[in-house]
Structure formats: C-alpha cells, structure tokens
Image (cartoon, rainbow, N blue to C red; front, side, top):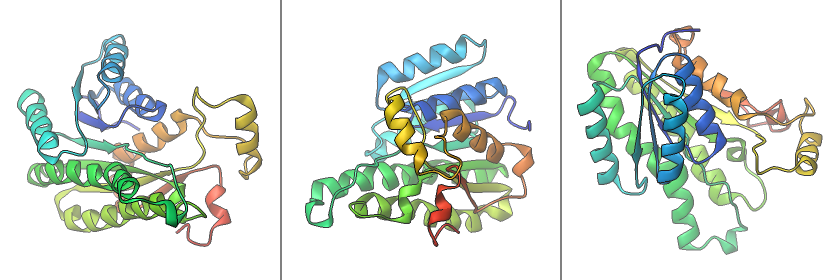
Length: 249
C-alpha cells in the first residue's frame, strides 16, 4: 500500500499484542515509529524489536490519564523527530459490569482508558497535522460498543470514540487529514488458551478468531495512501461478528 515510509508514526497503547503488531507493521513499512505506554518494560521491548529490524524507533512512558503528561510527551516527540504524520490510539478497557456495580471508580477507569486518552492525544496532535496539511489518525475501539448485558460502562465509552472520530474527520477534512476507526472483534493473544479460542470461534461467522496482525493490516490501510480518500469511517475486523447486531453501521 505504501505511503508511510519515513513518516513519523505514534502508537499510543502497546501493552497488548495488537499495539505491538501495529508498531512492527509500521516499522516494516519504513516508518519512524514512536511507541507510548505506561509500561516501561513493554515500551523498551518493542523499541528493541523495531531496532532489530534496522528501523528507527523511540519509546516514551506516558500517564494516559494526565493531559499535561501527554502534552509534554508530544512536545518532546516533535522536538526530536519533527511533525507527527500518523497517530494510532490503541487504548482499551473492556471489563464490564452490571449497571448497579459500576462504581464511580469503575466508570472513571473506563472513561480514562477508552475515551479520555484518545481525546488527549488527538487534541495535542491533530492541530499540528492540520497546520502541516497532512495527517492520518486511526482510533481503535472494540465491538463491545454495540452493547450487551453487563457492558454499559465499556459500551458507552467505546461508542464515544466513534463520535469523536466522525466529528474530528469533518473538522479536519479540508486540511488533508483523515481520521478513521478500526473496530476489533475477538482477537486471540498469547493469553488465550486453545479451548477459549475454540469457544470464541464458535460465535463468529467465519469460525475463527482474529490475530493481532489482522488489526495491524487494517490500521496500515488507513495510514497508507490507499486510504487517502477515506475519512470518518469504521472498519470492522471481527470475522463478521458485527453482522449479528443491527447497529453495525
């Protein structure tokens, strides 16, 4: 697909294997990858893997719930690498509870992970993209946004990500900035047993769970020149599971 070679690509949220897959895919495409996470060890590990591919990489430890810390990090990135061309927000809190059990603390945790951090990164980076007349933003959310019993906290906060995506897409379309959303379904990681994977696959039309690389390929599409005429859209990477819901549009 091309188009991101030598571009500065920031990936916020690399704790999971999806964040790693996205970072490595960008590195394979020749981007200058910046990984951000609260976990120092995880950041260092991914930076080392990218440098092992003889590609440029930097890592930053970020407190996603602190807007001042996010701003400081973005300022440091631009000071060292210049304008940010691509932003991927891969932050996720999927634990849900029945409404009576959603305490203020649990609600704030969902809001901080699924929405606030996405907003903070967009607020700091999108205006610079508009000024430079170029940018690609990909927000990652989950199929939980479609709703389900015991999912009110994560459904509400994940649905908010798409609202933000659409509004920012309209706001920045005239500036050659595209903003899209990848909706992930059931993605298998190293923490998922074969038995769990089989149970998950039984509920998916294609009868198999996705891989982190499947999400990474979708993200790479939105970041590439192939998607330069696509903005404000959702791309479901869920093996057809969203078809069970009437709201998957």
